[in-house]
Each structure stands twice: as C-alpha cells, then as structure tokens.
Length: 364
Image: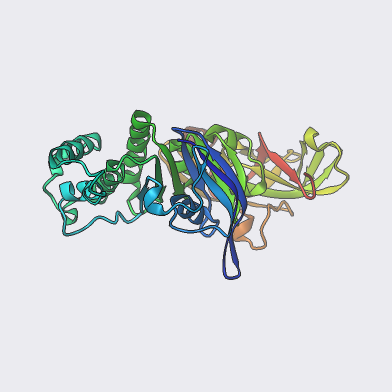
C-alpha cells in the first residue's frame, strides 16, 4: 500500500519539528528515515501512525486521506526500540494479543489464532520459544517477537522506530540482514527510523535524509552515497574531511593544491568547501616541492586490513575547524600499503585528494 505525505508541519511550543515535509512511499517499499537526534524523523513516523497529529498537511494511504483517521483504524503495525512486550505474557500470548483484542465480528477463532501465531513464530525463526516469557529472551529475540506481534494483525503499513537501537553491534548487524530478508518475503510497505547511516544504507530500498525538520535528500542508498545533495548529507553519511578554499572559474584553490571543479565554472572567487572521504586520500612521503597538503603523521591505527591515519597539516594547510584537534585530516589506506611504505608516527607526509565534492557558498 502506498503512502503519500503532503506538506506536513509540526511544532512543539517554539520547536519546529517538521517544516512542510512531503514524501511518497511506494507500495511494498522499505524506506529509512535517517538523520541526527531532533531532526524530526520519529515525529514524522508517529504522525504517519496516527500517534501524533500534524499542525498542517495530510497523510494518504493508497490515495485515501487518513489524516483524521484514528490510530486503531489505520491498520498500522508499530515496532518500538525497547520492544514493549507484555512481561507477564508468554511469547505466544504476546503475539496473539492483537488478534484477541479485535472486535468480536473480526476476531479469528482460537484455532485460527493458534495457527497464525505459530506461522509467525516460524517466520521470525523463534517457534521453539512459544512458551517462554520476555525476561527469558535475549534482546535480539525480544525484538523479533515484537515484530511478529506487529505483523499478527496483518498491517497495511509497518513502522519501526529505531528497532535495533538498544542492541549491541553484532546482534544489530544480524537483525539488519534478517529484516531485509523478511521484507523481501512479505513486501509489507515499511518505514523505519534510524540515526545509523550504515543501517539505512544496508537495509533500505530508499533513504530519506532529514535535518532540522526538513528533507535534505531522497534516493537509493548508492545514489545518496555517491551524489550527496548538500554538505549536511555528505558529512552525515560517513567520515569526511572538510577543507576551506576559494572557487574561481572552475578551479578550487586550497593551501597546497588546486582542484578542478568544472561544475562551478561561474564562481567568481567565492568561498568554497571541498569534502573528501578518508579512503579518497592518497598518502605519500614528503619531498621538497611536492604538490599536496603537507602534514605530520600524528597517529596510525592499524587494525585488520585497514590503516587509519590521523594527520596534522603543516604550514597553514588547515581543514575546517577552529581547534587543533578539529584540524586533523583522517586518511584510510590498506594496511599492507602502510607497512610497505614504511610510514611511522612523527613523519612528514603529503596528502592529495583523488576525489572531492565541492560546494560553493551561495550556489544553488
């Protein structure tokens, strides 16, 4: 079932949580709302669910306006970060709860409820835990039971609010893969909220980047990673180095190097920012006259196949940031290359971007 969000705004006192947000979610799509705390993503999810009302705008399910439809009538399944399971009920009773509280005319028979619950427990691969209580389950198991309970009422829309946020990294990764496989099997239109960019990029069909109550960019995971629409998106999707410079007629001048930026051919000595990801930096030994950013290797962290280098620029080569710690350049190179090059902490090196994204102040 498709979802249309039209010009939704919401304030809490002086705080503007959502500002004229519009978004379309196709039937059967899995969409991630991604952004920092306070960006409005959970508020938008709660408005879609009917748990919160918008100050302006409308929500349409399959073309029907549901803005004033009560949460109980929206046929929405909701999964919270902290499971919200009934502690005094067994796993079976938790999953059966939504079916048992249906109006008498819509309530399945006990035999149908039993069959449905066992089917769902098999789906989430936990049918062997039917008689256990929530306290006897791991965090990952509790979250899968919470998902089974949401699916029991056959929702038209599944909404998940930071569903794996309370779990440790290993379990989170396992459940991300599992959720993607489950969605591919069920094709329930789903929206999930997360502040974890890896989670959004790995699981979702499309990612909606939100910041300060507005949508910054919508696109497929690879699209938003490769072509960030704004400095915020670039900075939020993974680590990034930001360098200040000036753009003039398609060239960006930074201390120590010059970058080609033909997309900014019209710039006339404008303030510019060059964004470079750590793995897009070439690092080599310093030699007099070398082109690039000259930097001191302050720290090298070699773990597994990757060497992470923290470099302090010398002679005024400064990336963005007011303090010395903020002036660090982060580079990532293969650990084997680090060893073969004989790099050591304290050495002077030269850093050159292989790829940069340039934003010019005041440019559209």
